[in-house]
Amino acid sequence: MEELEEIEEDAGLGNGGLGRLAACFLDSMATLGLAAYGYGIRYEYGIFNQKIRDGWQFFEGKELRLKQEYFVVAATLQDIIRRFKASKFGSTDSVRTVFDSFPDQVAIQLNDTHPAMAIPELMRIFVDIEKLPWNKAWDITKRTFAYTNHTVLPEALERWPVDLVEKLLPRHLQIIYEINQRHLDHIASLFPNDVDRLRRMSLIEEGGTKRINMAHLCIVGSHAVNGVAKIHSEIVKTEVFKDFAALEPEKFQNKTNGITPRRWLLLCNPGLAELIAEKIGEDYVRDLSQLTKLHEFVDDDLFIREVAKVKQENKVKFALYLEKEYKVKINPSSMFDVHVKRIHEYKRQLMNCLHIITMYNRIRKDPAKVFVPRTVIIGGKAAPGYHMAKMIIKLINAVAHVVNNDPVVGSKLKVIFLENYRVSLAEKVIPATDLSEQISTAGTEASGTGNMKFMLNGALTIGTMDGANVEMAEEAGEENLFIFGMRVEDVTELDREGYNAQKYYDQLPELKKAIDQIKSGFFSPKEPDLFKDVVNMLFHHDR
Ligand SMILES: *Cc1c(COP(=O)(O)O)cnc(C)c1O
Image 1: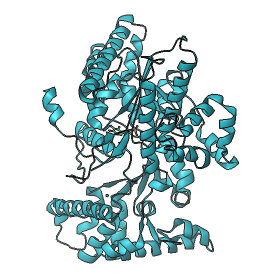
Image 2: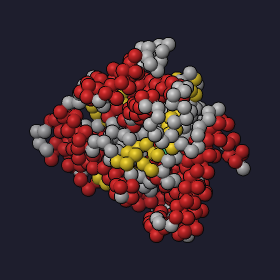
Image 3: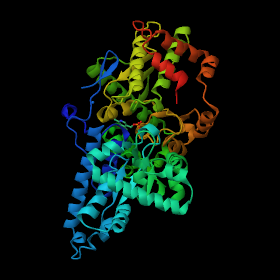
Image 4: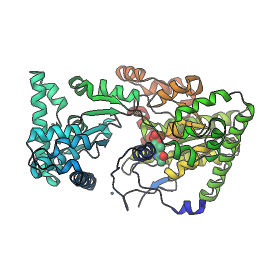
C-alpha cells in the first residue's frame, strides 16, 4: 500500500498554507456534515516540482495569472447560478423576485483576493444578463460574499494594473469604476472635505501606474471580513484596513485557522494517534479539545515512554526515507530541528542559517565541549521570480556542504536542505520532528498552520509571538514553548526609531563572525562574492 501511495502525485493545492487550509476546510465540512463545494483550478502544468542542482533552485514563466483568476471565477459563478435556478428557490414565477432569496441559499467565501473578480462578475450577471436594477444587485452581491484576508505584507496584496484589466475584462472595469464611484460618494457624505481619506479608501490607486486594489474591492463587496488569527485580525482592523474598520466596524471578525486532525495526526502518525486513543478514546478525532484529557497522564511514566518510542520510530523511518530517496545519511538519535515552509524573508530561514553558522563556529572553537547532536532540516520552495529567496536556498546548501564535510564537527551537527517540500513530504517529516521552527518576525505571519501540525505531533516549538503561535502559547502555557524575540509592539517601535543593522554587527562578536564568513566567501570559495546581495540586504534593507 505504501509503495502505491508513493506513485500518487500530490494534489496541486497552490503555493503553501493557503491551498492546504482550503483542503483542511473541506475535510472539516465533510466531517461536520456541512454542505459545501470548494472551487479551484486543477492544474496540469501550473504547480512546480523543485529541483536543487548544485545548491541552486531550478524549474521547468501576469496576464496568464489574471486569466486564470477570471476563469475560475466565471466557471464557479455559472455553476452556482445553474444550481440555484435548478433548486426550488430559483424557480419562482416572478422574474423580479427570483434572486431575493439568493443570499439565504448561497454563501461565497473568498479565500484571499485571488477570486475578487467574482464581485464584479456577479454584478455583471445580475445587471447585464438578469436585468436587475443596480441597487438590488449590489445588495444581493454584498450579502452573498465574505472575504478572508490572509496577509498584511504590502507586496503580497494584489493590485492589478487598470490597463491590463481594461484589455482583458473591459466590462468588469466599468463595473468596478461604478462600485468605486458609489463607495466614494458614500464616504464623502460621511466625511466631508476629507480628500486624503477618499484617496486612501479608493478601489483605484492613482499615481504612476493606475491599479485596482483587490483587497479594497473585496472589503467593499462583502458583508464580513476576517483575519486568520487573533493577532492578525487585530492588525487588519487597527492598521492595514483601519479606515474601512472605522466605516463599518461590525464587518470585521476573526476566524483563527486550523488543520484537520484526520490528515495531520491519524493518517500521518497512526502510532501516536493509537496511543492517545488507548488513553482517552476515539472521540478526540472529531473534537480536539478532548486532548486535555491527557493531563491525567502527564506523570504516567509508561505512557510518556511510549510517546517517546513512537517519536523515535518515526525518526528512524524518516532517516531511512532520506537515505533511500535523497542519498543522505542522518543520525536518528540526534535532535531533528525542522524549518519547513515557503522560503520568504519574513519567515527568516536566513536567521536560522546564521544560527547554524554560529553553532558550527562554537563547535570548532571548543570541540571537546558537550553539544547535543543536532540535524537541522530546512525545506521549502521559492517563488520563481524571488531572487533573495533563491539566494537564501543557495546559502543554506553552501553552509550545509561546509558543515557536513568538516571532520572537527563530525556527527554533532548536520544540515539538510529538504528538496521539493510538499504535502506528502510534510506528512513524513512532521511526525519525526523534535523541534519546530516558527520564527517569523512578529506581525508578519498571519496565522501559520505548520506550527499546529508540528505541535499536534508532539514536537516542541521554538517561536515568536506571531500569528497562531500566540494562541498556541495561551492554550498550552507559555512554559511549554520556547518563545523568544521582539513582540509586535517592539517591532513597531524599532521601525519608528530606525533599525541600524551595523549596531548589532558591532556589538555581537558571534554574529559578526558569521556575517564576515558569508561575506568573505568562506562558504563559497570558488565564488567569494556570491552572497554579496544577501549581506547587503542584511545591512541596508532587512525588514
Ligand atoms: C502546512 C503547509 C504549509 C504552511 O506552512 P506554514 O509554516 O504555515 O507556512 C506549507 N506547505 C505545505 C506543504 C504544508 O503542508
